[in-house]
Image 1 (tube, rainbow, N blue to C red):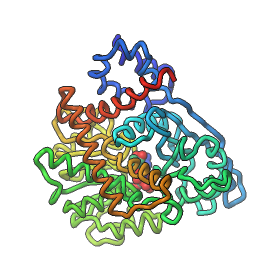
Image 2: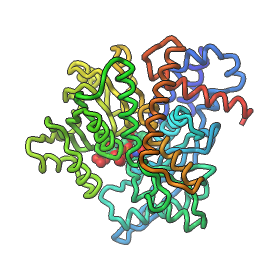
Image 3: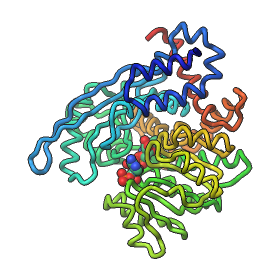
Image 4: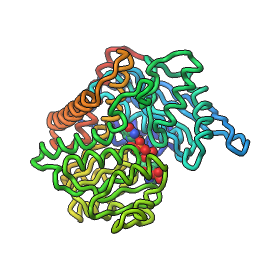
Length: 444
Ligand code: NDP
């Protein structure tokens, strides 16, 4: 049995029931096979893949808090500190009822390669809790965040582990958590990113993942003889990533015709009006359905099905495994030629294989959505310097980072004889730096 298959079997056996983690490990190891086979003896002796697929540490803890009726609620919180070979752990916190250890291990594992690809000195981690912020009062969210941080603060720090936002964690939640960290430790340090601008946040961090996604799509299209301007774009989700991907796509001359949330999707043939979406989602915390109530001609459809809308470019920006093989086939049949993942692993393995086999332009999440974490790392730099840069300065750096990530993925794919396969290219490029650092640091 090959080393890759052996390690994959071991991961499945040792992490029962963690299907998303198995899926992420398989996708990465399969695409690294060329590199690993070429170095098999060395890597085997050093148990490199066994170390790479085992988190350095998984912390899980109780999160008790009191709801508005005086009832005590208990949630399950986690921090997965996956790999610190190239820098302090860095990765978001997710608050969603679906959160479990397997999902956070998949996200932490992917984060290791993504963070490496940015070229910045950040290791990989992820955390979160099965708490659902939806429908909770601000006081309940604060009570939860304070309790969550009361346990988490023991394991994080500006030079140790720097969490950020993810699904369900925006400016409000980061603010409550930061306040509690400061109160517990007495430290005013860059321990979280995605902070508000009045207390150490970076300009352009809010926009970074969505803008970065569109910057890399633009670069991928240009390098393949196409252009973004004039194209029709469908984006799933209507959260942080989706909204700012839509904003940048529109700024670059594309027409965004659909957005969704976990209840359904809206189609606006005239192009989505983002000021209305921002008011619904960012101000009123409402549902995407309300868009169709407000905009004449827009149509709301309950349930999944956003990928049946015909488009040139699809940007899945909601959650993992939201785009399956059937969706991929429908997209292609309707003329879609490029897909880039704003979310983490939104395409199933079968859908990803379909895109690659059919020579569609496909940019995987760990490259396409790396702009968020890259800008978080820029926030860390500003915090360390006790400085803040202008929006343009951060945005220009983000743009350069995304262009560079494309170049690295493109180059690695070419070097290993799979030109245009940015899945392999991104995994290989991210892997090379981490492995080099791990080898240099000995058996730890
Ligand atoms: P938000 O919470 O702001 O938005 C998430 C969006 O996805 C919402 O519209 C939500 O709908 C929808 N969604 C969430 N879960 C599901 C589900 N199970 N089925 C269908 N729709 C769902 O999160 P973000 O925009 O921050 O994150 C979106 C994705 O991007 C995630 O995969 C995240 O890991 C990834 N990402 C985010 C980064 C960031 O900087 N924010 C950085 C890199 C990756 P509803 O409101 O109904 O729940």
